[in-house]
Amino acid sequence: MKKLLILFLLLNSHLYLFSQTHNCATTIDYGNNKERGSYAQINGIKIYYETYGDSTKQPLLLIHGNGGSVKAGRCQIEYFKNDYFVIIVDSRYQGKSGNGSQELTYRLMANDYYKLLNYLNLDSVNIIGQSDGGIIGLLMAIEYPNKVNKLIAAAPNLRPDSTALHQWSIDKMNSDLKNVEVKIKEGNNSNDLIRRKALITKMLNYPNIKIEELKKIKAPVLLVFGDSDYIPFAHITEIYKNISNANLFIVPSAGHRAYRLEPEIFNLMSERFFNNPFKRPHAKDGY
Image (cartoon, rainbow, N blue to C red; front, side, top):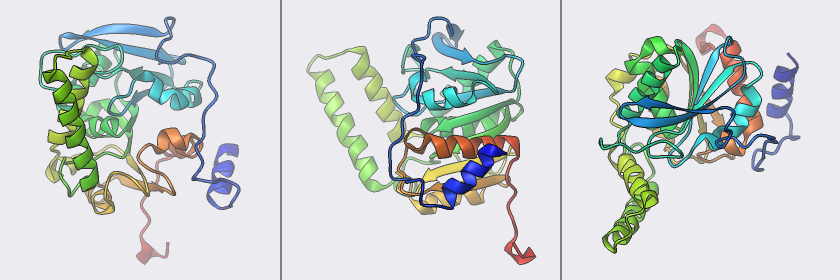
């Protein structure tokens, strides 16, 4: 109740400045914690993951964005680990996990997470996914619905074209890819460059989630976007309107990574959603 009151005050006063960048205090080197880190053999590669909290509590899976790692979710681990069993993973081609020989796609990554949950004997998890992680979360809710209890998808897109991403973002990815390819052609075949090429190529070619697939999602979904996101507002509303059990939270004066830049407000809203999912009101009924 106290946390909900704080959230109310933050949303309804000028005491909280959304434009500021906030750092969460941590005492653990998340992503490099030997006591909590493990590897699992999944789909032909080693997947690195860390777990925090009591394993008898509701599991919460955190899925980072493109180029991220366990460390990217440190503010969420710190906040939720006392009340949830938190699982956070280095997705393939990132962090301490392997690459593999298959083409890197979001559906392959969603299958990695599905099989990891099976490996850990976990069902019906809550999920927080950011950007790529939000896309993976949507695909898990579509393809493995029994695994998803509630989903927070922060800044996902359904397609890689200019209807779903600002053109400047696509132009930058194409420019970045050309720079990487030049370095590789010059003889730099480092793992970092190989990974970077695969990650950019994935974003330029995928995802390709159809509206008909989106409509299959039954789990409660909270969509979170910054009001200055990479994602055009028309695409944000397209996603929202086609998930029957979805709610939409637009974070003021925030960009693509609200979960890291505004962890206080993001975590409070996430906790509110997990504890008591929002219901869409109907204006015609007087709301």
